[in-house]
Image (tube, rainbow, N blue to C red; front, side, top):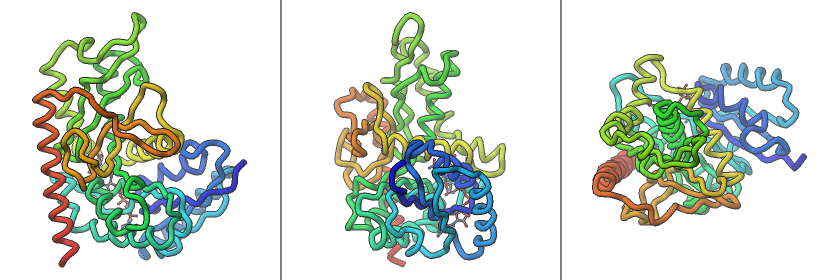
Length: 332
Ligand code: NAD
Ligand code: LMR
């Protein structure tokens, strides 16, 4: 077993954390050899609830789990962390868009960026889950100038998992037979779930998803809208936003960042745009990436048709607007 690493989860008394903490402590994310010191950050009124979460973590009796520190102080929570799951933020309610949370949440990511800058390891890997995740990740990175921008990512893995599951259901195959579906852009209703490059493994061999589905109208309209609106559909049914699936996606995202992607496969992550595919720089945009040695590279040279191009423009424009609004909020 290796030396423990410190991992922070913010919003640790909340819904997503409740499912995420088990995955981290059990070795699903950082591997079965990696012991973990958990730092649990929440706000002062939630400290009693957090005590209950700590009791449950103890009662899991998991050998990888070493120290558990519940705290309301960012300085303690971010001390020497190697990985940060920034979950703590207000969730949206029915009828809201995720960007309606900007005013309430963006300040949190400024404060946590500053804390990461001061206290975390310089090679910390940061995953922003709290919404609006892309713009929060951008702001967080901006306030942590001593940490490379590449180390800040936003979660669109839940959208990828949703898209993969929807395609598998339509093709009537097991979910892991579908690969390389892409989420482009914002974790919002403007995102572009793109099955054009996805493949499916069948008994007759590996085929492209569009040729197997053979229904352009379904792929361009029904599929795209279903994934774009899936978060809202969960809220309408549960009266609370997705938590179990969000936690699973956060674990998937960090595990792939830590251990890399499989040969020939890519995953979608919100990363600071480097201008690939003509996307403006300095927004956090979801791209397909491959990962090796904890470093991701944006998959290049995928053909983008006119329909896809117009969808990429819409979602990048929304991200530019969110960035402007976030900057306004932070100026006030
Ligand atoms: P929740 O309300 O159950 O939990 C949020 C927790 O964050 C609460 O315990 C709250 O006290 C805490 N918190 C608030 N401000 C904080 C701060 N400054 N520091 C530390 N903790 C703080 O919400 P949830 O269901 O766990 O969702 C959390 C966030 O994740 C929401 O913004 C939600 O919209 C978002 N989300 C994102 C995705 C995604 O795919 N990116 C998926 C699901 C949910
Ligand atoms: C989701 O996609 O389920 C989350 O972002 C929560 C939400 O507000 O939809």
